[in-house]
Structure formats: structure tokens, C-alpha cells
Length: 407
Image (cartoon, rainbow, N blue to C red):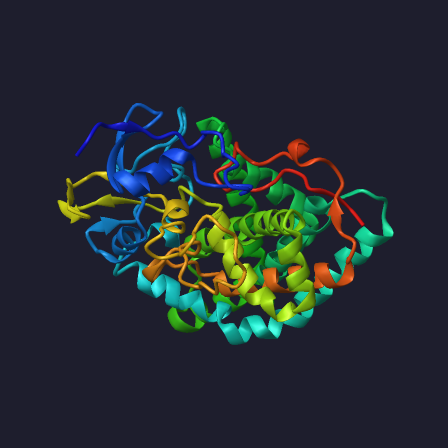
């Protein structure tokens, strides 16, 4: 099997081959030399990693791997921090459910995220993007694109979709950032979860008394019609998952995608000349950045042979999705950012039954943001040297703290 390596999620995110974010070199070396490997964790424990694209897809569809993050063998990546959910006060969330529990939970809400429903949201998302660009263009220069556009657009969209008052968005952003901060202590993370859970529980109880035509309101109505009662804990876990996942990931993709385009004049010119390329450009951004490198984690419930290596039962397994998305067996010249690649088969949204519920919404938001930004701000450029930019190397979800731009 080879020596046991040490895997460090806090390793410096390196700039290689003109790439603003590549997987740590160790992950790419694993992809080449030892795609299924046993590793030592910074917490002192051990786990397994899978770096190859095909192996990751196998794990995500094999019933011998459980998604239950409260499993005692679920691995930890940071000191003083549990698996994130092992001792969470929240009810079990959809992302940590296995069959037969997972199917009904997903089917209950998947209709809210169909391609047709997302298409119906396009005019409102376009309006939100235009309003925030109006404010940015009317304001002082330089502007921070993260604060002016990347954060508020997905935050407002998910708040409106769920029926959460946007006036409280600072509350959500502060606590979600704390929850995703790898350097936060277990107490700090638990406090963030509790604060969000208390808020959402109160919001759901209000909607039970005052029905509304939003996602939570419709779920309440469906549950009453089907069961004659409202499953508050299930709604709480759903709201928590969608609120956190619905703004943090998309916001980071907007800032990173904009940065990549601004440092790649040829691609920027090609997109401006043919906005129809934006659809493929978004897919390439999703593949290229794969901002949640350690989001996909499982535990084996039996001995499993993977890539010629046997992983014992009750072993934690991390899927290195960023390495998988640079697998040369699947993506030619994988280290290059290429908007003509047209690869929707990337792993940025996962794969299989747990594939990201909100992927259609994320795609629509990103397409509208980039098409509108490039059309309306033709002189957009970085306002500071690249070496002064601050990236989120302290967060579970990679991104940028600020993106100063001018025009």
C-alpha cells in the first residue's frame, strides 16, 4: 500500500501553472501515484482518501459507504472540532441520510429546484443582479465585488426562495462563516449552529401560523395535507442546509470566477464577444475551482475493494473532488482553464443520490451574474496587485475575502 501520508486541509493553496487555485500538490501526487491511500489526519486519527474521478463516483453510488456524519468512525480534520454534525443540536440533515430515509426527504423538496422552476426565477434574479450592479456603479471606486455583488445576490435569492427576511442576512453570513471556519473551536461552531437553529425554528413556527407562498410555506402546507401535522425538526434541518449551502458556495464562485476572468484577457474577450459561451464557462469554473475540497466524506460499512486496494469496514473516506476534477483520464489538459471544454460531468456538485439539490439554482445565478457583469461593466479590472488579494484559506469552502475592482 505504501507509506501512510499526512493530509492537511490547511495546507497553503498553491498557485501553479498560472492557476489561482489548484489542489495542494500532495493531492495531485496521490492522483498520479496512489489514488486510494491511507492517510494520517491532523487530529491524530487516520482515514482513507480517494483522488481518482472514477473511484469517487463509485463511492458516491456504492451502498457500502454511509453518508451518516454522526457515525463514530466519521473522520475529523481539525483539532477541537467534531465531524461538524456528530454532536449537532440539529435534526439529521438530508446530506447525512442513507436509504431508505434519504429518498422521501429529497423527493419532498426536489420539485422546488427543477429546471422549469429555476427558469421562472430568472427575471427576479436578473432584477436582483441589476439592482446591485446599479448600486456598485453609482458608488465609489474601487469597490469590493464580494460585498457589492458576490455575497448579496445569492443571499437575497435564497432568502426570498425560503421566505427568510433578507434584513437578517448579516446574521446568517456571520454565523455561517463561523461554522465553516476550520480554525473555530468546537464551542464556537456549536454556538453558531445553535444561533441559526433557534432563529430558523422561530421562523418556521411563525410560518405555521401565518402561511406564505415560499419554499418553507409550501412544505408546511404539503406536510399538513399529507400527514395532518408539520414535522418541525425536518423543516428546521432542511432550512438550515439550504440557507448555508445556498449562499456561501455561490458567493465564492462569483468572486473566484470573476478573478479568473480578469486575469485571463483572452477568455474575457471571448465571453464578451459571445455571451452564449457563459453556460460552458460556468461549468468550467465549477470544475476548475471545486471550492469544497473536503465536503464529500463517507464511512465504509463493510470491507470494500477500491482501485485494487481493500478499505476495511468502519473506515472514514475523504473524496478529493478537486483532484478528481483534474483527472487526466477524464479531462484533457485538466490544469488549464478552458471555457470551450463543455464538461458538465465534473464533481463540483457531487454525484449520485446526494448530488447537490440546488445545482440548477446555482447555475442560473452564476450564468446571470457573469453575463450581466461583463455586459454592463466593460472596463472591469482588478484595483490592486494580485499578490494583495486575500483568499479563504481558513474556510471549509474556498473563496475570496475581498475582490477590489474598478472600471
